[in-house]
Image (cartoon, rainbow, N blue to C red; front, side):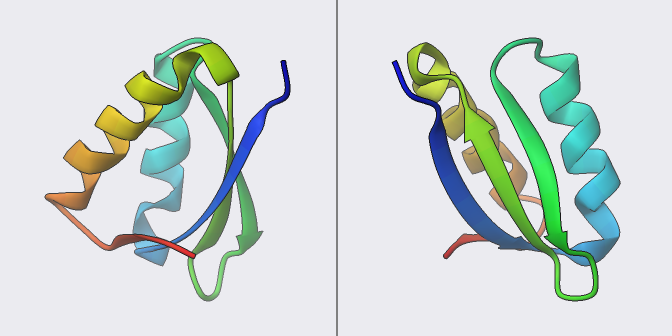
Amino acid sequence: MKTVLKEYMVDKTRIGFIKFIFEAHDGIAVATTLDSKTGHIRLAIAPQRTESAFKIIEDLKKDFLFNEL
């Protein structure tokens, strides 16, 4: 199974928080910063955990910018 890659534009001040959230949910996704100035990140999501990852993303969207590119 291949990793699911998704790119997002997020609030740049929250990148560290986003990384922490996904690290805390072991095995769901790895967040990589592509451009810290604009808030461009990539999530490498485990294929069997996509539903959980998308639920986390939806929750984060309630609090700050988290738009899929």
